[in-house]
Length: 315
Ligand code: PMV
Figure 1 (cartoon, protein in one colour):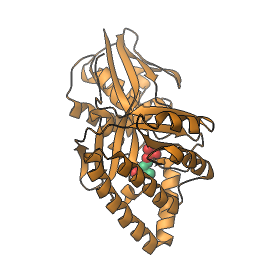
Figure 2 (cartoon, rainbow, N blue to C red):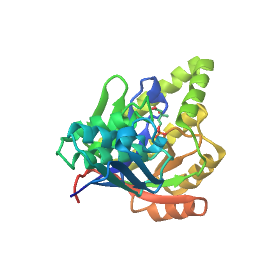
Figure 3 (cartoon, rainbow, N blue to C red):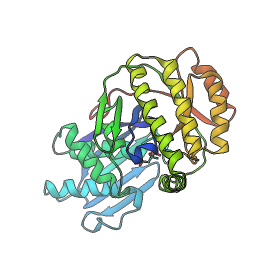
């Protein structure tokens, strides 16, 4: 028997970096998915096939020695085999249309889809339990993850998040497209977060003022999302970008992409940590083609819609 599950990637629409210090962020899942197919095999092995490579580990010696990026899957498979006292192994096949390592939630989506697919071989768990497992699995590689990405990948749609109150689903059925352009500049979230901390420590008053501007902006964004008011959402995204530029997380390359994106979209900003990674531009059918064309001359670009489905455990 095969057990199949898929989960969407995500973008941060508003609030990255300031959320580290308690501000609200708004996340949105996108219609690019990772699909995981699992099956029980007779051999006492965990076999993982993915675009990032193929890995085989012995079930009984797997816990600490697996290749870093594969740790979540080895964790989920060994835990499940142990729970159901199975003698064999599990083969896991991961297929992704989310580019990895550029802040679009590929790691979280793969943990959520794998948690559902692997446990689905033996039992059907509610989404809340799958989410818990997925966060445990992701912590094998990102110790301090807030769980924000896994949550939005599990439930789909839009969500607000802050450290104190955790998650709240936003029930707006706003309809927009995003044009996403990958700068192809590699970045490390933890390094950029550290750089922002230094900026904050050296510019206390300025940071406090930027933080309160961000908080006010996010309240306005929540109202605009409720009203499906794309031109206000877009202009708030561009304002959010100005705040991000002031804390030093943009780059010349990202600025160039943003300049092109803003010519025709409702607004644009980086998504995620910055220092590289992607920009997002808010569009609808009136300006999507032109925005794609503006950016195509510069980089790796595609469009995406909000995914309202979240985790799917069969097709
Ligand atoms: O680059 P991403 O999508 O992992 O987002 C990082 C978001 C930050 O606010 C910069 C860091 C964090 O842990 O909240």
